Image 1: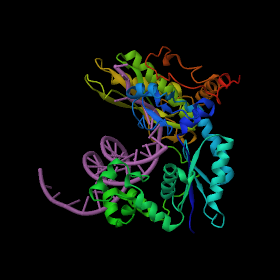
Image 2: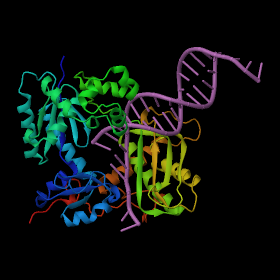
Image 3: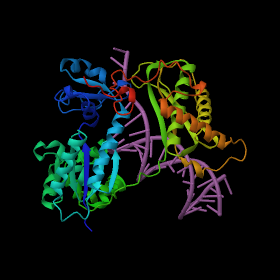
Image 4: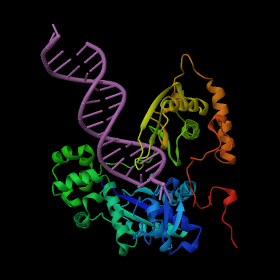
Length: 420
DNA sequence: TCTGGGGTCCTAGGACCC
DNA sequence: TCTGGGGTCCTAGGACCC
C-alpha cells in the first residue's frame, strides 16, 4: 500500500505562544531564550535577520534594544499546554497521529488518496489558526523524511500558503534537486561534510548514491534516509510513545559554584526534580550518575567529573535519590574550581511495578509510595517546590534565571490574563 | 608461555534530533 | 559579566567466556 504522511509544525512556536496573549507583539520581532536566558532558541521571521539560532543572548542584547525586539525567557509550562491544544485539533483531522516534539506532529493519511488532501490540509491550517491562534506549516509526502522536506519547503516558500504536497513524483524530484543535503532530516554537520567531500551537494544526489557506499559512509541510518528519499517508507508512525530509557536533570548555574555546600544544594534540588519526573512516568532507577564541570568558556582550570551511585534497589523515592546524589557529589568534590553546571543522569529505567526488591538493605516500598504520593499531591496543587525535603536547601543563589518570563497564562490561576 | 576463533555483553563516544 | 536541556540510536572496542 502507498503511504501518505503529513508533518504539521508550528512556526516559531515559542514566539507564537508569546504572541497569543499579547496582540502588541503581532508585527514586532520576538525571540525566546533558553534556560538561564543563555541562548536564543526561537525567533520570529522579523527577528531572524538580527539573531542567529542558538546565539548567546549577551551577544545580541544591544541589537535587540536597537531593533525593538521583544525578548522572553522560556516558559515551558505554557508552551506545553498550547502544544496539547494543538494536538487536540490535529486529532480531529486525523485519528492517527504521532506527537514528534513539542511543536511537530506526523499525521497518517495513508488511504486518503481519493480525497483532495491539499484542500484538507489547508482547512486544518486555517482551523488551527482560528481556534488556537498559532500559525503552522504542513508537508505531505509518501515518507516521513519527505514529509519533513515538504514541510521545510512550505516554510521557506511563502507563496505555498503553508502547505506543500509532494506526493507527485515529478514535483518530488524537482524539490530534491533544490534541497541542500544538510537540510535533510537526519543529516547533521558531520554527515553533510562527509557527503560534500564526495561532491554530494543536493538531496537528489544523495538519493542516487549506491546503497553500500551510503552504508559505509553513514551506517544504517544513512541508508534508511536514502530509501525514504526515494519514496520507500522505512519509518513507521509511532503512535504510542515508547517507554523512555533514561531520564536526566541538568542545569547551568546562574553564578559559578565554588563551595561544596552550594553544590550539594543544587544537586539535591535536581534529585528532587528527578524523583518527580520518574514518578510521573511510573519509572524507577537502579543507579544514578552525578556530574559537574567548569565552563568551557572560562579561562581558569577546568574539571569534569562524574560518579555513578548504585541504589540498594530500583527506586523513585526522593529521599533515596537525594542521599545517593549527595553521596556521589561529595565523593568527587574538589575545591579550587569554578563550576558552571551540574546534573543527574539515569539510564536503564525500569517500570516501578516490575522492579525487583532488594534482598537486604531495601526500604519499605509501601511507606515510600504513600509519602511520595502525598508529596506530589501537595506540589501538584500548590506549585512545584511547595514541599521538599529539608536536605534540598532553600537559598539558591546559583539557581536558573528566568528574568523575562511571561506569565503562566494557562496553567496558573493567579496568572490568568486580565482584560481592561 | 604460546597459539586461535567466535560469541555475548557492556560502555564510551559520536551523531543526530528538537 | 553573560554561552541551554533532554532525549535516541549506532558503532567500535574491551572484557570475558568457551
